[in-house]
Amino acid sequence: MLPQFELLMPETLPEALDMLEDRAPDVRPLAGGTNLVPDMRAGTRRPGSVVNVEGLSELRGIRRENGHIVIGSGVTIAELLADDLIAEHGSVLVAAARVFANPLIRNRATVGGNLGDASPAADTAPPLLVLGAEVELSTSQGSRWVALEDFFVHVRDTVCQPAELITAIRWRVPPSRTVGAFRKLMLRKSMAISVVSAAAQVTLDPDGRCEDVRIALGAVAPTPVRAYEAEDRLRGEELDPDLTEEVTPIACGVASCIDDVRSSAAYRERVTDVLVRRVLSELGSRE
Image (tube, rainbow, N blue to C red; front, top):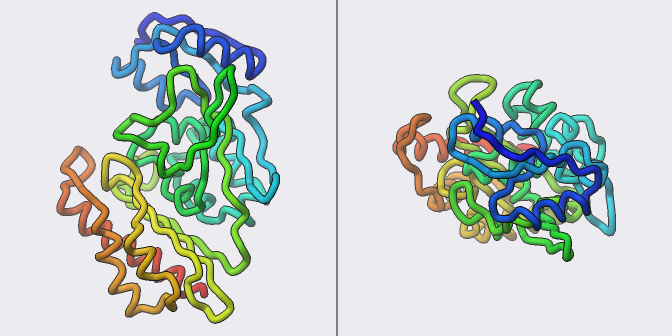
């Protein structure tokens, strides 16, 4: 059963931001509700007020703007799969969206909600990290852009303040000769939280060497993480099988795996090694 709370239904984004400011800190925004509603039923979150931002036109749409791909925070996972801009300039995000829960959840869950919930296993986080994404946080007083790698603080905790709302996500249009890959291990084929996830993206120079590279892991630490040391080792090099073998343990070094209901730490460490090797091998085969 849901606890008692005040439900607010703004018609515009400015109205929603005013409501958040007036009732902070005992307030939560609601979009798809695929995280917040189960948490409220379980008693792990008990906001006094809930601001329903679902359907606000200002939080919708996907566009190309000033050299960026910009996604409204209210865009659903299903909409990512249907969008040509995302297919062309965010293929790694499309790969994650394909294995996100099931069709019913994909039709409800939003990109902003998935990031804002700050689960270490959030499926959109690793691909957006390798895309170099930023998150727009807005209040009635203005907005700020925060790099996604600086957005997550700890499990279910971000730099987003109670009166702030995630309103958009953006990343620079990747150069040509950019390829990405995403892999996820889950306990069953649908409706399962990641045991481990891994994403990588590489931009190649004309000689086939790694001009830019990013690697990110999910569900292996209190927050989704970048493997900066492994990225540095790959830059300027050809991504061949020998280098993949060398870099994989370096990338896995960022993991701080724990035992939980989905996996033992030892199993998670082993699977992390496997997934990193697979995403890097996939990129190497597509050069």
